[in-house]
Image 1 (cartoon, helix red, strand yellow):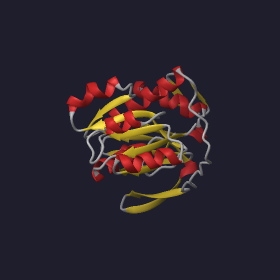
Image 2 (cartoon, helix red, strand yellow):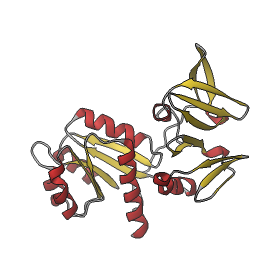
Image 3 (cartoon, rainbow, N blue to C red):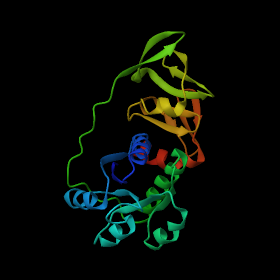
Image 4 (tube, rainbow, N blue to C red):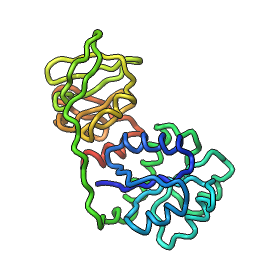
Amino acid sequence: MKIDCLIVDDEPLAVQLLTAHVNQVPMLNLIGTCSNAIEAMEKVKSEPVDLLFLDIQMPMLSGIDFLKSLDNPPKVIFTTAFREYAMSGYELDIVDYLLKPITFERFFKAINKYLKQIDNNSPAKAHSLPIEEPKPEEFLFVNVNKKHVKVNFQEIVYIESLKDYIKINLVDGSVITKDKISDFEAKLSGQFLRVHRSYIVNKQHITAFTAQDIELGRQEIPIGVSYKRIVDHWLKS
């Protein structure tokens, strides 16, 4: 399942942060960004949008007024720097309300809310336009003992966080490099998913899974509570 997303925000830094968050969730497909409601109106009319990340305070037309103007609006997650707008947002039956600056953990919870809503209602609408999957990179280089070592994605079984370092567990052996797991996650292709705050797994190496953990051969990786819904959709898609 792919979820077509649109970001509407007049702050470039906010757009940049949201884009990074979207790119970390494989099922989210960012179809574009708009700096105001007028641009967003044209985008919504021209192609299907499943989920809208909508800033409230914008020039010309506020996010709230823009949402009210839509006859058949997509699901909406409001984003704003002003807490006092929260009640107005929920009166419009939005999915969630994110207060800037938006952390990935809070963003992730909002996506879980969206998935719960579409699970409880009808399935997400079918796409009328084809989605072209980007061809994933097949490898990357990591810094190991002052050398840049080539690591093929297909050989990575899972990645484990070790505070300021990560351990990349391979089919044959492992390497340790200085990196944050969230930064390394952004470099990976769609076959990888964060399943816990300390673990990323390669879907190709999963041999079994339950509601609580994922088996990669003899290795068991726990699924974090806040990650369960997205992991479940990812594994069954």
